[in-house]
Image (cartoon, rainbow, N blue to C red; front, side, top):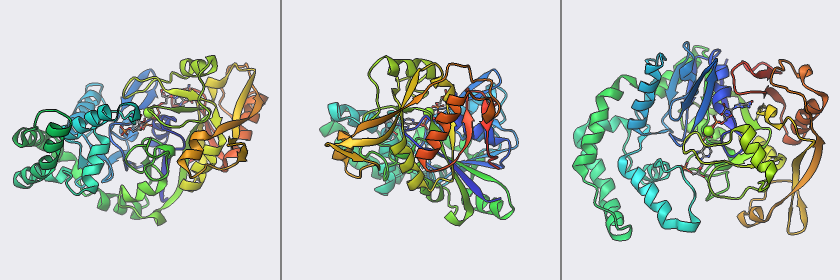
Length: 427
Ligand code: GDP
Ligand code: IMO
Ligand code: MG
């Protein structure tokens, strides 16, 4: 069985953590391939609720090896506190593997993220303030610090010096902040080195050997398609590639090994931070979605912006990721509406547009064209099969499937592991 990818088809928070956890019991490896602790994944197992940021959601499945791939950015303090938090709750984390090539989020990257956002003022991106963008910028500028650098003090010192040379100029002269001392950063990073060492591995080799041995590898995306640095609503995006191609570059596994790409799709839409969002609601319906769906950020505690389902975006996600199927989440949240609007196209400057416009200006002007589907009033949280759903809920799912360009293989009807209707088996 080759590899499969599970990723966000919208702007993040689609329920990837729950979906990954659900599959975790049947796969051998769960791999994060991009992003860092900007992610916030909630997993509910029985009466226990876990909030994961950096660790792959597979960490909660005993038989599964969780892997942090080379494409991820790692904040060592967050890593260690997340691990100890899980250990205190009796979760065994000893199988975790971390790529020596993953980049480290240094304390100065976090500082730069925060001061840059402040400097941008009204034009800010609304980042999570976790140092994600500046760390990827250092990686691309070739002044990044990698996990493996923690094990050579002299190299580490030289690299931190090189990174801080320019940053200290910016911090003091432009942002009016204090100089960050090289020694202090090096000392802090060295303090993490030994604690992280048992997990560091050649993850490229491990994963490719596992695939050669017919093990099942699941790639778990952070964020979502529309937050992708290349394919998202740039510049209101994150600084990595959550889209399917990122699974290859962020792990060192070739595309020929991937046989299935599953898009996690919420039955409505949410977004955190700045940027265009055609179906966003500013009325009591938006408030109701936020309240019923519990749409508050796991990472920053910010209220999520809420709106109706957008089929244009779903079709786009199918295309740029080569999606084979969808996992539709949070259908239960829509119970109780008389009718449910679904955006089927946009109107841009008086013209009907069926596909996502490549021009940022056009997308900012896009107004949703809605079709109204009949709602349902029955509680669906106990539904176990598609046939258990009320007729109108079935029709809603079928309509979304038709509009989105790929079959829906599972439906979430509640946050728990077992609150899922499986239509086609994933493994
Ligand atoms: P992620 O970032 O994609 O992993 O998603 P988050 O965990 O940030 O947000 C999804 C939220 O929805 C979490 O609180 C989940 O527990 C919850 N959730 C996931 N699937 C469902 C579902 O089918 N129904 C309901 N009601 N909640 C769900
Ligand atoms: P999960 O994995 C939703 C958003 C931020 C901001 C933009 C850039 O839980 O789906 P960054 O800190 O990454 O530089 O911020 O991206 N963002 C997310 N929105 N879910 C996430 O992760 C997100 N991670 C980043 O709000 O708009
Ligand atoms: Mg989230």
